[in-house]
Length: 403
Image 1 (tube, one colour):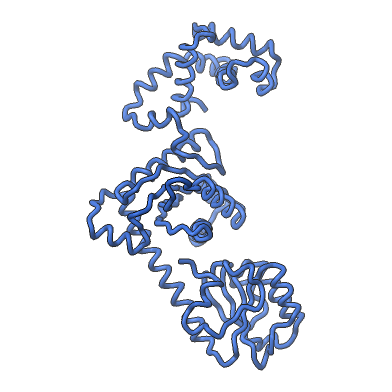
Image 2: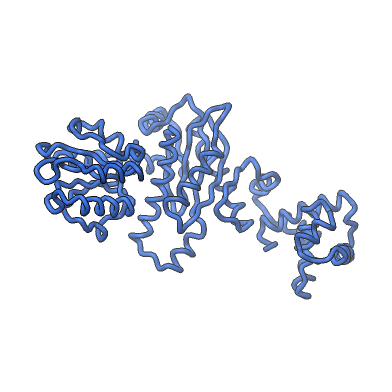
């Protein structure tokens, strides 16, 4: 469960706290709570905090309070709780109007309520939730990456974390694009790495929460592994994946992610298999050097067979027999006949479209096609030849022989 501005109102002891503005933002996630009386909070907030103030420093200075609310909203805080009483009798209309306009939640709490009791209650709930997530993550890591015998005890543990034996589950793996390069170029510290990964996980969890998906998940290295319950007829996995990608782009911005979608399984023992499928799908994004994209294992076509082959020697031999001469010719002559062949076949041997894509004259394409046939000693009108070459192009991509 997420701790949000909306569901904290259901916690024991918070019955007297009420929302007075910004109801459109009640789904904002609360990462922690702070009590402050210092108007300048820019040096110590990180985003996601719920702030409590009594108004000792601000008092009834509406202009100062409005600037304070604008500042904490800009810094992506979750919301503000005003301890109304001797210092701030009630929230000024200017603050309420601004909060409503930007969907920034503002609460009022009677002055006689002890802030220490409220903040401890919320903090305890957040901490307990964090421990439960870590426990579930460790459990999922065992299920996915270790050879675990699925006993009744294991099923009982899974049920505690939200697993439902009556539901089907689909695998999603979210990978941070070029994260190692980003860390190297920006000299990012360990604390910031943790913060980035935590924000990505929160973004994914938020999408699942909004779509009422009780997922089981874990994280390893730069990858986030999710098992999501789905309906048999309409599993809307593509929509969820697109929402995750957009949410991360929207909330973090300086990085992108790619998402691999695996198959659907109907039992806990199938989790590792469909997760592996999602990881294979992600491998294709790296082979094609694509970022910020979504790829489904079911769409991999013949590449699915390649992944099941343990010995790649025969594949390499097939590539060499059909395309190695052309590749070596390009390397020796600084030409790009192999690229021309790939585009030509992709465009169903349409000279005009191939010329348009490569920005060269149609006659040049005709010359190149003839030269390719001479080098490979083949006829590009022969369908069996075309089949073998297309297969070898995919082998070349899979084995990273074609850049």
